[in-house]
Image 1 (cartoon, rainbow, N blue to C red):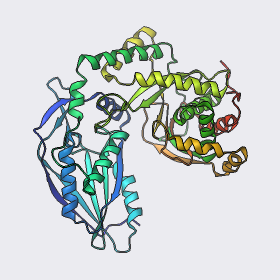
Image 2 (cartoon, rainbow, N blue to C red; image 1 turned 180 degrees about the horizontal axis):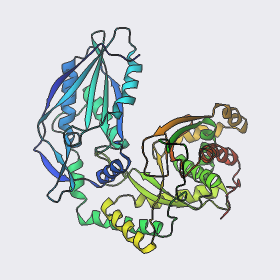
Image 3 (cartoon, one colour; image 1 turned 180 degrees about the vertical axis):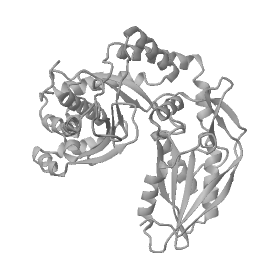
Image 4 (tube, rainbow, N blue to C red; image 1 turned 90 degrees about the horizontal axis):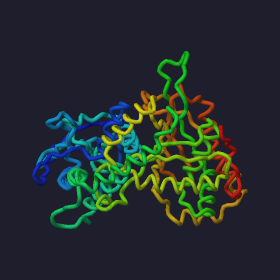
Length: 462
């Protein structure tokens, strides 16, 4: 279905300021360790149409300008004198642009989507490859689409949007003329060695230490046995619920809380119902781009913070309020040196006599604050409309994963028409039945609380 009529490459020259070397940024350290722990590479795919009549030479020139404008795209992984990972940012250089020619009877957009979804699975050699791959799709003699892969080692979701904005501005001739200069990954790495940044990391460590000192050894208990399931320990599923989305927006409107924090409260309550894990301590991804100097930089700025939410013997609205308060604090304590966190956890492990590990992660891939017009639309929602949407709920078992270093990881996917949860879990810690109850429980909690400010969590203290 997705065969190619031909492939080729052109070498693209780029120019850039003088080369330099710097330590990994805090965000890069965190991603690099996640990659080593999980065995994955967390690459992001993207696509964009090219203007009608564009030539390969014009697309190549666009790629060359992108490479010259952003230091992160010219980064390779190296080691410093002490043997620690560092980043070597090149000056002038070359990169290859792939040219993929589709058969005349091919459909271009489905192929572009397929490539965007599958190409990120091809691993980078970070000591040799640039962290960006790009291809131009040709169909019936015309350049039609750009498809690319960007490594998470140099960009988070916010940085990927900045990359896309600059690509479109260059493509459409809207980029400002003259030299391009904004804070880059090297500036961030240098700034994180300054005393002010070190103080931020120290404050974050006090928050982490307070959260970790008394948590269970594992969020969902010690792993059990998996008889008869070789190669099937790590599994994944996707739960999609338009009814939960409408209910969540109704709760957000009533409580004056943004949907991201409402969704977190619903997930925490559903986890408590399905597993009994309450109070619940989780790792929560924070984008950090609200900090001065970080909004416009192409680099991985997002980092995990730690949040504890008690859902026992209270109302869902109260859990929403607790989630709002807890995530505000967590957001202020999410910028830190991962080396500092490693020292804190090692010390706590020794003091406790058991590991202090948060083994449940939630990552909201939607905008950090959903737009007010989305909340306004919830004013038209009625109980009857939510009931009708229940028929659209779906749960899809996606099959195995190769490896995980956590017991559960829940991605809140970037959809506006439904709450969509992609959950990955360790079946030696959570049964499939518990996971199904957890995912369906998010919808149940949302529907119960949509129009009832006193709706109980139905979770009792152990």
